[in-house]
Length: 278
Ligand code: SAM
View (tube, rainbow, N blue to C red):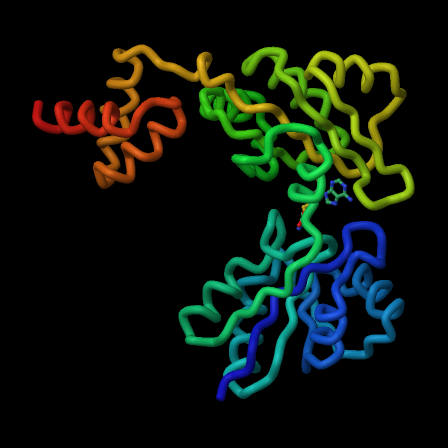
């Protein structure tokens, strides 16, 4: 029988933010694959966990995964952890989980911390629908294009960003999306935890008063106003024609674009069918 691969969420600051189950799984595993073993040692010491650790990070994941899969196939239990929060969420582990799935190995999540969800729960912005975008592209052109692409989306937008680049992201977001309501969550669960709420320009003005922005940041931006999200029939046709080059299913494309542009699905569906027929 192959062993089990556990995907274990760990704290993102406060060491108490870990479940009883996670501590037990880390204790009982044969091996912990950690993004940075030195960083995770602090957590393991805090909970007296002496399970052996090996490094599995973005630079060695492909090659490391083969070895881990072979150990799992021999019946060992492996727990994957990252430096903070939930592995695979803007963190390594995708290749390993993918390979495990292909090999028929059981993959079990042990849920817990995640900066996007924790921040969203206190941001004071709509939570009924949110779009996690991870780290935006670093290059200005690509970042602007990424913001343009999500401009019509009515879901709350969620970005991870480094403190060095956060002001530039807020400025571009204001330029492209307009001066929307937003929230910057900094240093979640840590001593200097902070939420700066208000319009994008107000958040930027607050950051401008500081010599330096420090700590880990998540930026939440309110989605497009449903009225604002409407597109002209001509623009809708252009988007559909462009997307049809990828040969998508009519139903799936109608659903996606209806949600993105806040239009009735039937209207989008009929437009797709008429353009396909032309
Ligand atoms: N896997 C993590 C998770 O589940 O949230 C995310 C890891 S990603 C490499 C690191 C980014 O997550 C940071 O740059 C920041 O945007 C966000 N982050 C992680 N810890 C945070 C914290 N304590 N406060 C605010 N943001 C945090």
